[in-house]
Amino acid sequence: MSVSGVRRVVGGLSVFAVAAGFAAVAGVGVAGAEPVTAEGNVHDYHVARTISNGKPSVGETITVTSVLTRTGSLEYLQQVKDVHPDCLTYVKDSAKVDGDVIGSNKVEVADDYAKITGSWAVYWNDGLIKPKFRTVEFSYTVGEGCARNVNLTSELHVSGTLGSGQLKGVGPSINVQKNISTTTVSPVSGAQVGQAVSLEATVTGGADGDQVEFFDAGSKIGVGTLANGVATLAWTPTTRGDHSITAKFADTAKAVGSQSAARTVSVSQADSPSTTTLAPISGAQVGKSTTLKATVSASGTGGTVTFKIGGTVLASVPVAGNGDATYAWVPTVAGTQTIEAVFAGRSGVTGSSTTASTTVAEQPAGTTGSTTGLSVGAGQVGVAQTISAQISPANAGGTVTFKDGETVIGTATVDSSGKASISWTPATQGQRIVAAEYSGAGTVTASADQISVQIAAPVDGGEPGTGGTGSLGSLGNIFGS
Image (cartoon, rainbow, N blue to C red; front, side):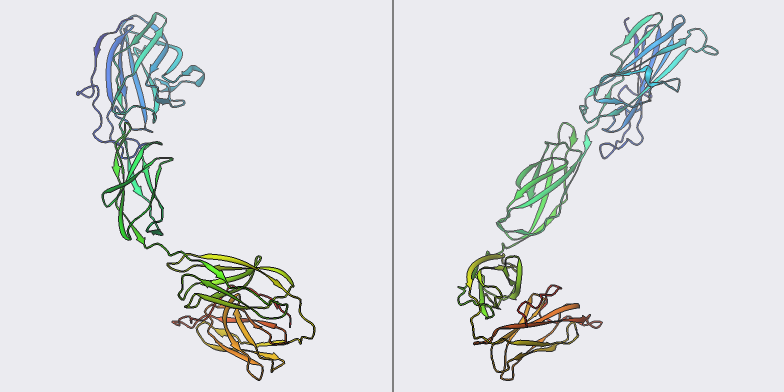
């Protein structure tokens, strides 16, 4: 049946009048929204249709209310079909007639409509005792798939015992607003000249596949693509110093663009590469001290070299000013051994490592065993103490390497009385394992001793000393005694 007497009003303004403000972020309901209303006649009904907000945002729920006033003879209304844009999703149990929820078994939902079925008497000449009009409601959630800033129309179809009709071209329409976006740049650390670093921009209101431009002090440096709300760019700085990084998300068909606040990224000079080499290892013999010498190409004091055999750490030795780190190694097992030297790196210098193989000979006949007796007492962080080792036989000579855990404290020469001493200023509190490793000399074999000592915290206001530290734990009496 044709539509006649079409009239559209919105609070005395127009069909598309809406609230002045809308949500700042997609998915948040509009504050102070005003409805849009349209009126028309169909199948002896005067219909007034109202949508709760004519300019909704994505994620908002809107309600479509239709008041059907009978202008002809009595009819039993049997179906009401609300046709809507397919980007709207019907809200379960929102269909109502005169405020009463319609059971789900009487509601049919499709992509572009929701329809109720029942039987409701509508009279035309009473309105007091007998109902002269019926109020039908449907609610929908606004989806991301809705076109933005475009009038999306709706319509109503009715069917009853006296026939049916379609109220087309009346509406009202909705105009879904663009998402209001925000853009932020994540903090960046460790940026260096000539080294690629990842810049990240997080955008709310955008969509996967949208592009984000990155700028360094206003100069464009690249483009990233949004994935799960984040765009990344591999950036390689060419100059050191502070760089002002911003990200710009341009307007799209569905979102309003935005630009981030500036993020200061500090770029330092790139670390210098290093190489580590091991001096040739010769004459290695069970029970006899053999010098391991690693040289770091980036000379200068700082960092440590850790000597290992397989996964076992022998010692961690500070790197001297000439780039060397040495350790008196006493093999305990004959055969081929692979020595690894690992430089940990230091500020401005990268780490590096190397390996070398050597053959360890059996301990020769006619050697004399030795014993090492370590003397060390409980101490305190930042307070120097003397630690010593007594070697027997006393006149053998040689050296003693003192260690705090795996870290070498220093090396001392055995005097004519068989004693070697060194000053140690603990830098780490707690239970420490201190070891003394005698190198052996001539036909006298190596030996070692270790003691667990308690190091107290520094006194209030005191500063830790600069002595060697090491990881907690015991190396064990690896040479025997």
